[in-house]
Amino acid sequence: MKTSISILIPTFNDICIDTVRTLQRQAQQAEGLTYEILVADDGSTQPEVVAANMAINDLPHCRYIVRHENVGRAAIRNFLASSAINDWLLFIDSGMGIGDEEFLNRYIAAEGDVVCGGYRVEGDGTNLSSNLRFLYEKAAESSLLAENRRQEPHHNFHTSNFLIEKSIYLAHPLDTRFRRYGYEDVLMGKQLQMAGIGIEHIDNPVVFNRFEENARFMEKTEEAIQTLCDFSEDLSGFSRLLATSRKMKHTGLSRLFLLIYKMRKNKWRSNLCGPSPSLFVFKCYKLGYLLALDEG
Image 1: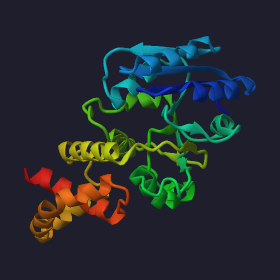
Image 2 (image 1 turned 45 degrees about the vertical axis):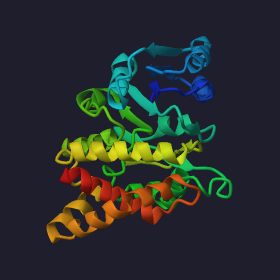
Image 3 (image 1 turned 60 degrees about the vertical axis):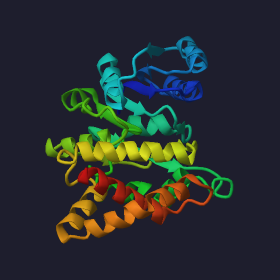
Image 4 (image 1 turned 120 degrees about the vertical axis):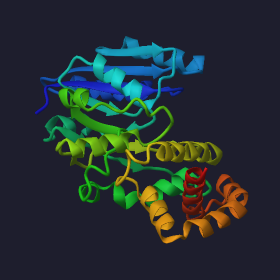
C-alpha cells in the first residue's frame, strides 16, 4: 500500500481544474494517504487558461506553478519530480480525464516500483469519423489493454499515466535533450529496461477523449519523426518505424519508396488533413517522412 503520493500534472494551454478536483477528492477520501497535487504550467501562451487554472490553488494540498518559459515535455516532468515531497510520484497528462472513482485507489494498492495504468479512447465514432487522431488511437485500442502491454512492458511505457517510486525517477529522469514533441517516454522505457527495473502494467486507464484537428496532429507527427531521426541511435530497438526504415535501406527498397513518397507527398498530406483520412496513407507518409529526413 502506498501511503505517500505526489500527483504531478504538467500542462500547457489546457484548463485542467476538473481533473485536479477529481483527483483531490479521491486523495482526500483515501484513508491514511499523505498527498499533494502539483500542476506545473510549461509557459502557457493563453492568459485565460492560466487564470482559470489559478483556482487549483484554492483546493487543499494543491498547487499551481506558473512557469513563463516553455522547457519541453521532459524538463517540465523532471521539474515536477524534483519539487515533489512524497515517496511516490503519479504522473497524469493534463489533457486526460479520470476513468472512475477507484482510479487512485488502484494505484495505492498496486505492486511494483513502476506501474502504468494505460488509457482508453472515448468518443463518438460517427462524429469523429474524419478525425485522424481518433481513428489512429481507435485502431490501436486492443493494444491498450494491460494483458497486451505486458507482452513488452518496457516498449509500452507511456508518461501519460504512470506511478513510480521517487528515488527511481530521480535516478532515471527523462532526457532533457528531447525538446521537440515525442519519444522521451520511449527512451525512458528503454533506460529502465537497461537498468533492470521492471514495469508493471495494470488496467487503470485515464480517458483520452479530446482530439486535435488533423492539421495539428500532422504537425505533431512530423515533429515526433524529426525527434526519432535525431535520436535514432538512442531509440534503436524501441521503434517499429525506425526498424522498418532500416530494413528497407538494407534491402534497397528505400530508394523506390522515397521516389513514390516524393511524388505523392503533397497528395498524401492533403488526404490526412482532409475529411477522409486514410490510416494506410498515414503509415506510408510517416515512413516516407523518416526516410526523407534520413536521406537529407
